[in-house]
Image (cartoon, rainbow, N blue to C red; front, side, top):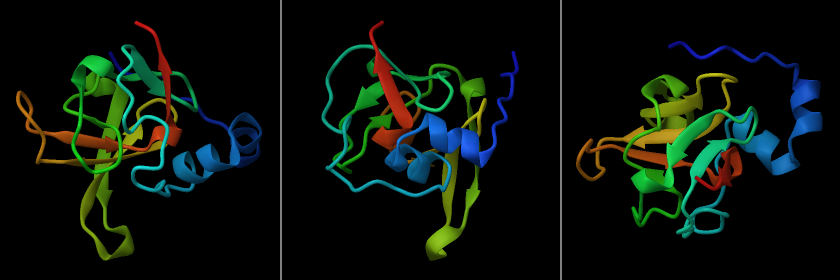
Length: 132
């Protein structure tokens, strides 16, 4: 089932998010490796988009990738994320965004564990963890 789109102005996003969340989610930046909230988090629950609350990743799909960012082998629902080519900074990567609000979440790589072989490398600042 398609996700309903959420549209807000930059001013509305700024008033809703912290400076760091806005920088990561709306300006498509990246937080420092190993110096972020959920890198080593082992708490059970569901990671939601910090901008709009859409459920994105389950702690059941989280794994330690050794990269310094929370990593997941799959989203809770493929329709909750969008992927697109990202050639910024002279790199060719695949960007992961929230399907509802378009927030930049991170990138996905084909070097993850089974069963998908994917590593969704996600910025902690783009996530909010809630219990199951």
